[in-house]
Image (tube, rainbow, N blue to C red; front, top):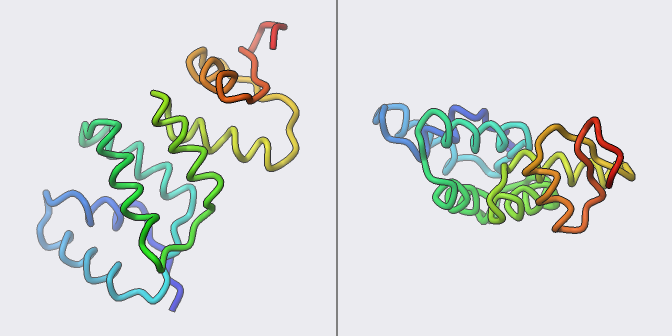
Length: 136
């Protein structure tokens, strides 16, 4: 069966502050024939690990790579790779996903109030500009 997993199950697989739920999460993930990992759940996974559990960025990226490298995982590869690329450059996973989806939907420009995101996206070749400015 193709089974989608909510963020809280993915978190419990890696975070053992509730041993009973961690074991259930492990059994659920291991028992699924196909793991459906939505981009929304993965963005939330990264955010929760960083904000709630204070996991360092490099460790979050490592955990995310563990999830997506499972043979039975299904996910938006391009969006996840773009998110990881931005994370590896010091930015937010979600910024990379947003930029990928903008390109995927044929957007010619991405506008943001996030100076760091705009700078990183430009460095990676994305046409982006800071909201309220005219320079791209």
